[in-house]
Length: 328
Image (cartoon, rainbow, N blue to C red; front, side, top):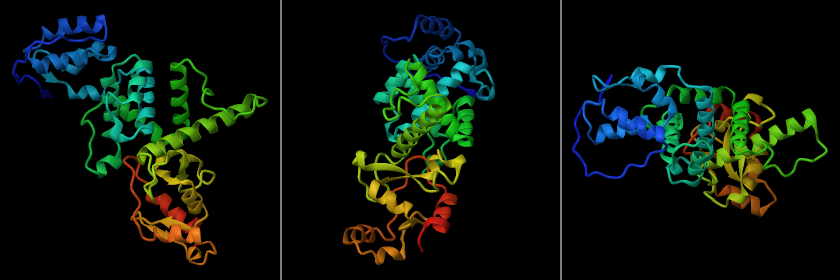
């Protein structure tokens, strides 16, 4: 248990903005139960009162007699189906925005907060909670928030076990909360397609869009080879082709952000990326009868790619590309 009964210096009084009447009532009731009413405990009670689930389970979270946070509450299963849907949407957003943009003032964060009727800060905190589970960030000694809810870990594991299904489901949930059809951003599906055939195409298009947004966000909207940030010419490149591995076609660790020319060159095996993330050119490049291609590819020989902020490419996919696609 983590003791919070350490008195803090009193600060000047200030106006407090509450999310709702229930939030305000909770704050007034439970602050009186704290051993101290200093700024630390004011902030603690305020945060615990923002969400209905934490209000309903406050005595499972905090011991008002001892002044201790009950850290075991993180493992309890009082998450509701509604809160799990919200966590899925939060993870959806975590995947689609650069890590450096996770803050309460970033427009997509504010948009999601409005959709799910949460504060901007609570959504930003939820995204930061996911960061603590991200191996790519851990490898860079970035931990995100050190604690979070059990539901976040559940959703993280579900996505990693079935990226294709969970990506689509989270997009469907998001569309429903927006009161829009899942097809609202799809403009190229023929009207004559119906039934199961249309459903398959819609799912493919939705997931392709999600994968592109996820990969570009991971690489901070920059080509991992050239550093180009001209988004219209950037694409999400599969390391192991999507038709060769159904389970990992939506896995962001099977993706690279490249400009279109390099994407197709990679797909054709004209270069590969080694396990230490360096560019290895095919012998074929040196014999290309194309000055433009030769010049542009040769300049990147043995250069190290820029690694993503999230979802570092898995070496098993890089090895597959080297063994199977790369023209040695």
